[in-house]
Amino acid sequence: MPLRTRSTSALALLLAACSTVSPTPEAVEPVPTATSGDRPGARPSPVRPPVAQPDPVRSRSDAMRSWAEETLAGMTLRQKVGQLMMPFVLGDYAPRGTGQHDRVSRWIEQEEIGGLIVSVGSPTDVAVKLNDFQTLARVPLLIAADLETGAGFRLSGAIHSPTNIVLGGATNFPNLMAVGAAGDAELARQMGRITGREALAVGIHVPFAPVLDVNNNPDNPIINVRSFGENPERVSELGAAFVGGIQEMGAIATGKHFPGHGDTDVDSHIGLPVIRASRERMDSVELEPFRAAIDVGLGGMMTAHITVPSLNGGGELPSTLSSHVLTDLLREQLGFRGLVFTDAMDMGAIDREYGRGEAAVMAIEAGADIILMPPDVRAAIDGIIEAVQLGRLPESRIDASAMKVLRAKERLSLQDGATVPMERIPFEVGIPEHAEVANEIARRSITLLRNERNLLPLLGTRTARVMSVTYRRRNDLLAGRYFNGSLRSVYPRLSATDVTKDSDPEIYNELLEEARSSALVVVSTYVTVVSYSGTVALPEETSNFIEQLAEARIPHIVVSFGNPYLVREFPSTQAYMAAWSGSRASQRAAASALFGEFEITGRSPTRIPPFFEIGDGIRVPARNRGR
Image (cartoon, rainbow, N blue to C red):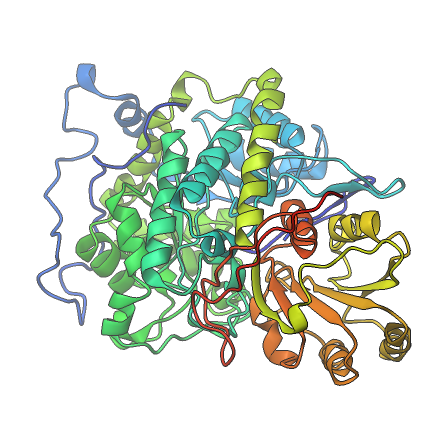
């Protein structure tokens, strides 16, 4: 999913790194397709053949109809198609009468959309905004958000620019690869439970999490540390635990990105990745975590804007638009009965190649239930209606998906009240008990992969001249904030410098001169996929600087707060630690690990060729000393 950021008064909203009624879709009927009987190349004998279902509306008498059935029976075709739309809204404060508020209000009141995907904002701003929109809806809205690292993935990271004060927010966990490095399914379950609890507290019903992709390509510019790791069995175990945690709280977990986005070196926000793995390889690697999640009752699935010819009848249609993938494979062979969300339909892999109405029609034909972030809501609705009127799509196909959406709302009891009590948010969101779970994951995830000359743990001599160099994205104002703060508490003379991809190359010569007179240089890299720039590499000047430290035998440590594969760009570094995430919890854990404040136990959940294998990690006992 793409991150949306816009200026909001004096706030710089940054991403730091997207009920007790069970939402499991055990009774949801399979989705019919317009061409299921004569689709070329369709595979025979599915593993779990669909069971014939009665008409979703007329199967019971009026007196016995559920809320979902009664609602669907009273809808026009246009209203039913509206239920399949989930456009994007920013989570910032937007009072009535503003352009943003009026636009979303029109979607709700005129197009009668089924839901919204909300992005960055504070927990209270998001809750107020969603409560307001729910009051405008004739049928309650189903609300989703990208919450891959907890509710804090979207609902934290705000800084008041004039004062540089961090305004707080929901719990932000380390990236999922940190959970993989910790290797504890119970921590994954706890993370899922907290994610579901905090999401529901602010009015979000569908956390788009967890990522179930197996990151088996070190050059992947879009998944990377968003994945639990490279081993499909471990990804399956941790992913299923995470799903269970979310759904124990009553929210709808959503696995992504089906059928597996881990083996690509193309960013689907920019172009269409092609994965040429065999069907056998896809079965044994990419599909395994999705099977495990389906087996524990996964309620939602998000498609991938990729093409896998071995799953696609040999063609190169995007999976989001392919009935081979969404119907033959996902529905029939894997037996998934939950809600199928497209990935964002405004991403380059789709929006540049297909008309905005046509793309929506093709997604519904393929087997999707909800069109996520259509770039033009009305065009998507009009396109689907026209396809029904022309006989291309049967209206029963629309009924089936609309009914699934309505039944999900019914299981969440939204018909009894869709707004959330604002007074409960401080007791549910970002509370210390939740932060401690994030801290535990961060500590358990710290992975030391190289430690020449037994550099770690550091002595922490307060008079030492120590230099910290932080590589970050220009707009990542939290990068290094907590890590350098912790270093400075031990080294009062700490010299700290930030560099970005736009830094003058001459600065590295100055830094190298300063390094020669320093007792230690700590280089921290905050390189993540959050910027969706199509690359997760360091500038050549930064990598060369690290290599020059090694050549000059200047004591130094590199800490990766994101992409762990960067060490390939500076192979001679003396010490290398993976913290996996730039979250506050990870920054503080990494600093504490440098000084031996806890035992380092993390194990790499991925290969980092040619240097490290899955399971590598140097165990370093805690230093027994007071500070």
